[in-house]
Image 1: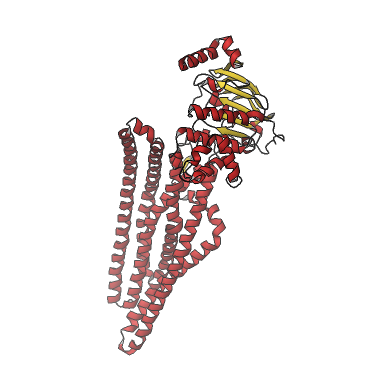
Image 2: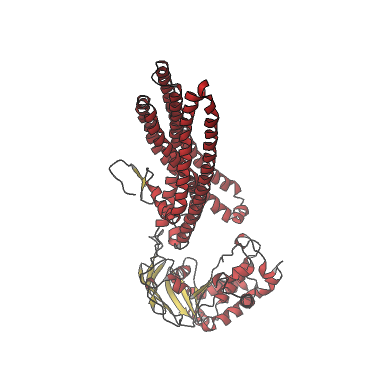
Length: 602
C-alpha cells in the first residue's frame, strides 16, 4: 500500500512488500462488498434507525423529569412512558434488522473471499509452494477469513453505529448545553491519543500473532500429513515439541496483543468516565445555581453516557479493525501472488488432432531453491508420436525433472520444451495438460469414493460407471474394488488411508486410462505392485501405449525391457540410449545397473 504524507509507518514483509499500520488494507474488501450494496444499504438504514431511537430516549427522559413529577402535569406521565415503550419497540426491531442484514452480509462476503483466494491459489504452480507452506495457506483461508467475518458481520456495524451515536450525541450535547459540551470537547483529545498510539502497536501485534498461528498450522499440517512416518520412526515426541514451540510462540504474541488491548481499554474507559463525572459535577452546580433544569441535566448526562459508551466501544472495535486489517493484508498477498509460470496472452493454439510428439531442445534447468545445482544440462530428446521411451538412471539423474518441465510446472532457463511442435511457454498450460495423463510414483487419492477417484482426471460428471469399470479392469483394479464393502461406492478415507500402496497405484493407472490422453507419463507406475498385479498392469499399459506417446520413469529395469527406446540419464545429461539388449552389450552405466538388479534378483 502506498505511503502518504509521511504519517503512515511501515515495516517490510517477508515477501519484500511494505506493511501498513493503518486500516487502509481494508479497502481491499470493497470489490467483495460491491455486489451486495443493497444488503449493505439495508444494514446501514437499520443501524441508523437503531441509533436514532437510542438518541430520542434522553429527550423523553427530560420531559419526564421536568414535567412528569409536577402534580399539575402528572396526567402526562402515562403518555411519556408509553412513548418510552414505543421507542424501545422501534429500537428492538431496528436492532434485529441490523443484526440480520449485517450478519448475512458478513457470511456472504467471507464466502466469496474464501472462494476467490482458493480459486487463485489452486492455479499457482509448485514453484510458488516451494516458498509458501500449504498449512500457512490453509490458515489464511480459515483463521484470517474468520477474523474478517467478525468485522464485516459485526464489528463494522458496531463501529458505524457508535460513530453515528458519537456524532449525533455530540451535536445534541451542544444543543442541550454548549458550556458543558465545551468541557467534553477539551477532554476528547486525551481519549483519542491513546487509541491512535496504542492502536498502531496493537496492529503490529495482531499481524505477528496471525503469522505465528499460520506457522503453527503449517507445522501441524506437515506432521499430520506424514503421521505414519512419524510413528514409524517413534518421532512423536519430537513433533510434539516442535508444534508446542510453535503454539507457545503464537501464545506469546497473542498474550502481548491482549495486554496492549486491555491497557488501551482501561485507559479509554477511565478517561471517558472521569470526564463524565467531571461534567456531572459541573452540571449539578449549574442546577443549584438555577442555570439549567434538572431534566436538562438528566438529558445531558444521558447523552454524555451514550457518547462515552460510544467512544469506549470504538476503542474496542478499533482493535478488532486493526486485526482485520492485518488479516486482509495477508489474504491480499495470496490474491496478488503471481504464478512463476505465466500464461501467454494470447496463447498459441496446439495443432489438431493431437499427435503426441515431445521434444526437448538443449534444455538446461536449475530449481529456484537450488540455483547452484544443475538438474538438467543441455538435454536434447525427441519422443516420436506413439513411441514408448523409458528414462532410467540413478536417483538425481533428472528423470522426474523431465516430467516436471513437460507438465510446465517450471520453465527451463535454457532451451525449449515442445509438444506437437509448440513451445510450452507459448501455449495455455490447461490446453496441453489435457493431452497428458500422469501416473505418479505416489498417487493422490482423495477422501471420496473409488469411482470418484478414478473419474477425477476425466471429470466425474463426464465419466459413466461403465467407462470407470472398464478403466479399472484395464488397470487390474476391478477385482480388489469389488471386494471392498460397497464396491465402487466405497469411501477410501483421507489420502486413501483404507487402501494399500498397490491399490492406490492401480486406481491412479485406471484414472490415467480413463483420461484417454495422447501422452502418457508413467513415474514408477508399478513400483508398489506384487508380481501378479504388475504383470497384469504391464499388459494393460502395453495395450494403452499402442497408439500413444509414452514416457516411462523406471528404476526396475525389468519393467522397461519392452520399451521402443531406453534413455539413460546421469547428472542431468543423456549418456546413452537404445534397446535393452543393445545397451547391455555396450556396457557402461545401464549395463552396470542391469547387472546389479538381475544378479540380485537371481
